[in-house]
Image (cartoon, rainbow, N blue to C red; front, side, top):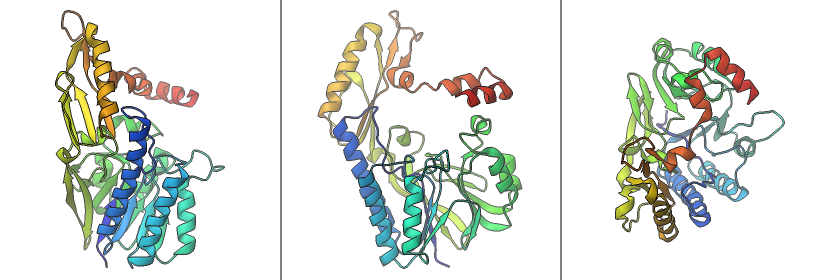
Length: 336
């Protein structure tokens, strides 16, 4: 059996707005495609499993779709190894009346190369282990987890030990108890973008950074290699090669593609902060330049110590979870 390279959460076709200019957002999309093609090429001698979220959204720009199709078609034609495309939560539409970019890609590739491509939309046993794609809700995921047969490796697209995800159909969760009861000797998880290893659970994080948050929480980008049924992590590159944090009062030139500007400022300096970061972003070659500067009260206290970045990303639903019971939250979810 060939070794398996697991790739996940590439989010091709992403259209960033926060922290970007129209040009840098476009160049980020192009860079992600180039890096994805290089990643596939460097693993041409292995079977490859793309374990969910190949695309960032249900429908991506056609130019990005065509580039993805071409790189996978080249692999099917030239590598001689098998490719598994597994559906993630970003890959599926909410209704059966819409065909997503991922579903279209699967249909075309399976039609052209049925012997080289396997698209996985439901729990499936493969030569490398048992695969569970993203499913419609947690009940279906729980049923699928209970049905995992004894095997060397199970591959899932879920959160791990995420209490919020466990209460929401919008995001699936594997609990530590479920992991322990699972008959697979190892569990490889996609969906999370930072590296973790807990017991038999392997979470590589994503391989290609596409945002500032992708650069936080891990010291490197890693992928999973499975050899004779045993997973291991392989380091692709350290985070410091692509990410830099700098104080807004000490801005400097940087060739890093992801730059987070932090520090603190008084409320009277807020306009200066916004102006400095906006000018830096326009003159930078970075894909993303984010504003994480904390704005303090006039006495320097942290009463208003929230960065503009955190305010923009405020999650109302997450906040409601802290105050509502599970039953009340379920009612709110239905209304939204």
